[in-house]
Length: 112
Image 1 (cartoon, rainbow, N blue to C red):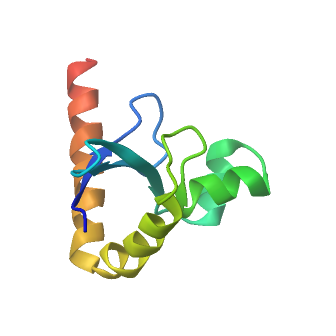
Image 2 (cartoon, helix red, strand yellow):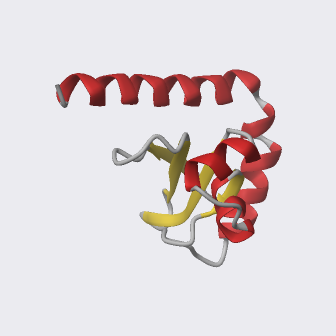
Image 3 (spheres, rainbow, N blue to C red):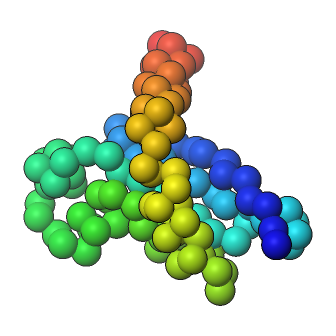
């Protein structure tokens, strides 16, 4: 049995409305997955990216394993758990969106 921590981070280069979760394993003492979640609509991401590219849309929308992040043999199982537990909790997803808004506001403030 293991315990996992989910460290959230956001992009400071664009307003892509996504979060990156680095999943940390207590037993392994290292990251075991990087999960992304984009909560906006398909239309938003087509407009944001500038074209309809299905590969990019799959990476941007909903939850997925990040193509550029750390993954392990258990990453797929963690993604399933993430979807079945955390993303069925509306309070949790609302908190993540709120954290994103706070991050973007602070970023604007420090860049003035």
